[in-house]
Image (cartoon, rainbow, N blue to C red; front, side, top):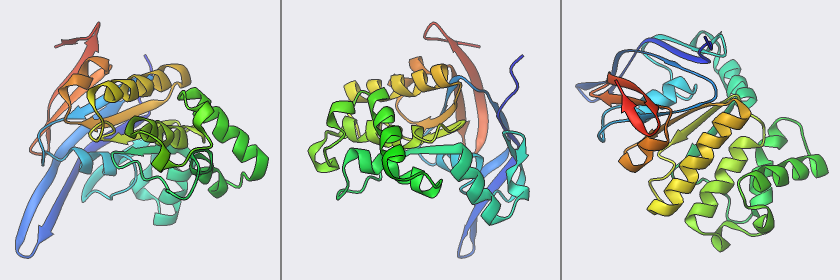
Length: 236
């Protein structure tokens, strides 16, 4: 059986505002596997984005462990966690997070600079990533010249360019119409299949669930359902 590449063990997270403490994640345990698109779903405020942040090394839990690629990431120093994310993780956000002054190719090149890859090598890798998401002929355009769906595909190419083993997507289709949302989620699934990448996303869009290999329901900080999807039907 395939080994999980991402494991949460009894993770807990709360936030305190003034005298009020809100438990956001409660004793949650989860395993995520390579070559699969796994989607975390749940109502607004259920803790989806918080869980994704904890699993991806962006937010430290109050308790529990996260094992990513066999590394107990929250036992590492902040610098070591940053290095782990740079080396192994790709991120796609709902707001695209592109630089308007840069072309699509230049936006995709950015992560390579932090990995010490520059010049023509970085440009060629960025072009290959844009080709893979179907935007090769538009790589010279800036974000203002692209549609919302195209911007999100540039963001996916930027995450893909460094060949991450873990790819995290936070509401990647929420700013898109249904057609472009379908294109984006199908692309994430293809990346999981063809690259062997572990792709974990959060969404509130029920239209996307049939594309997932696995659907994880989160309610009030707890995992209430964990289903594998086969032939677009949820199996219990």
